[in-house]
Length: 279
Image (tube, rainbow, N blue to C red):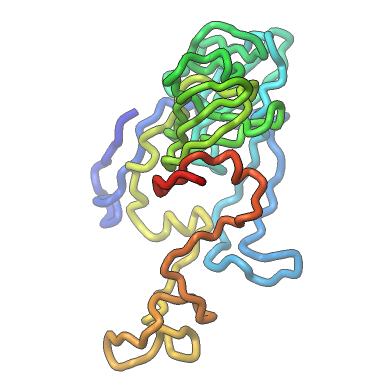
């Protein structure tokens, strides 16, 4: 896929870059969609707990088969579709009995390709899903399970991939896009190849209104506010009042680990994303 810059007929068009993709123009499969309530940053009491969210275009949620439970049943890709709820595109697959399902579209998978999911060793082909223990070292994978049968949790965004480093008994080592090296069970299934739509990050929005369509509201800098509204506000001109940067409630936000030390999956991490080995 290429990045396309159209002739600028408006001022914002000069800065707008979009992906040139060959996607299906059909409506999403009705039996695989459902209404999607957007919380707009509110919690169960209606209070805003995540700011700058709201508005945006209506979206239908596409139900995606992250488990690939229909094992040893070939399925044909009948369409590659856009999904407004994620960065990756979707592949609509159809089984021999007529049932359809959505999966994340792997890179280089096109309409007409036949894909397979299995708990055994099957053909090594992009888009096929099988346990990690049957894959050769260095294989690029995505949609990796963290627990066998629990569905894909790792590497689901556009262009992401993990590398299979080693297999030791019932454990497999993966290097994920953040640089972290972690263990998962070797009988966890993964899909061969990388997630498609890798040019997603090269696209630009072109104008602020396009962010509003996505449900992202404007963000005002703290230093541009009054002291009553933010600890970093006030002053004549650009001043530094100390304690930078901080949240509106005075909590310093210069960067510190937020991962809980009691998290159960901490024991599965070998090397953290900052390159430090876990002792």
